[in-house]
Image: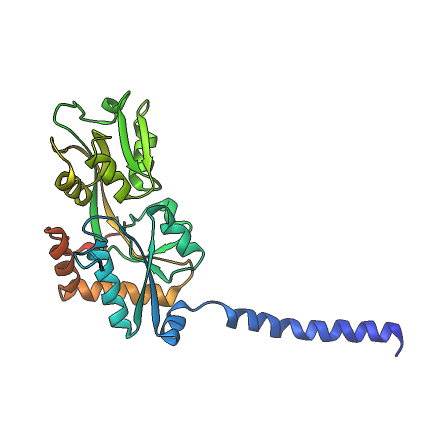
Length: 270
């Protein structure tokens, strides 16, 4: 065959293949909801060691409001739940890398996180607080200057203390369980944490209890999922709204946290 004709033929064949490749590329794009149903399994990432949200019960079985929420979602989907146990620092990366389908991990909805993962409508809340022993006079961030305060790494607490507590000595721990141990052993007299964790700290701490010094922020929590999974997000949003309407999700939360969620929480934007 004439080399010129052969080259032209290869070009035409390649050009003809481009639409098919493009179509194949669209078909190959992930549809997480369809994949979950096909696999009959929902991979739910949950950071363990967070009091009331995710912990081991007396029989060493995972439980807590986030773990049980994951179970309810899997049940509603008609699939099995695979619990993916992680640390707080891994919450966003595990969704970005798609090593879990969703994260139910007391993760606050923030503009920064929303750039790299998608969030459902809020499903729960938490208060970020600074707590310390009674003898320490702290009323605001300025009072933390020169003082040592413990935080869990890669949390909103970490970010807020780093940005606002100028001159504080910040001690970072990999997860809430390690932070809790440091407080219980008397290594720390000031912490930035959440009310649920503070209750467990005081249960385990010998001697003087920690008290709330000031509330840093009240946060809405969202279920995180990979960017662009529209069908999965719509399904989860609908499930959360229905579960608030019938009272099942607020009742589950109250069972562990002994407090009520706002009835209109799913209508909040953040």
